[in-house]
Image 1 (cartoon, rainbow, N blue to C red):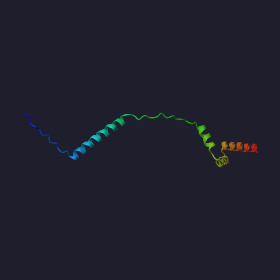
Image 2 (image 1 turned 135 degrees about the vertical axis):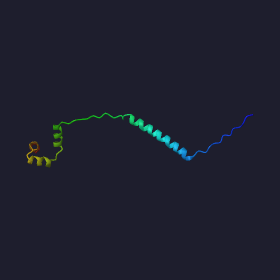
Image 3 (image 1 turned 90 degrees about the horizontal axis):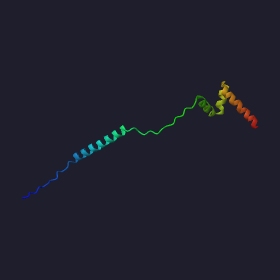
Image 4 (image 1 turned 120 degrees about the horizontal axis):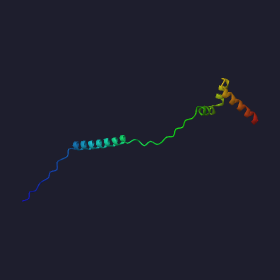
Length: 95
C-alpha cells in the first residue's frame, strides 16, 4: 500500500527572506570591492614637459603689457629697457 505524503509549504518569514537577500547583496558588494581594489587602475600615460628658466622668463616677458614693461624699465630692469628701445625704434621705422 502506498501512502500519500502531504507536503506542506512552510510560510516564509518576510524578515528572514529580506535578511538573506541583504546578506547576499552585501557579499556580492564585498566581492566587487575586493576585485576593484586588487586590480590596479589602468592609468593613461602622461607626457610631461619641462620648460627651461630662460623659456619661462621669455614667456612671461612676452605676456607683459606695455605699462608693465615701462614700469620695469624705469625701475632699472635692463631687459625691459632694451625691449622699450627696440619698440621705439620699430615705431620710428613704421612712420
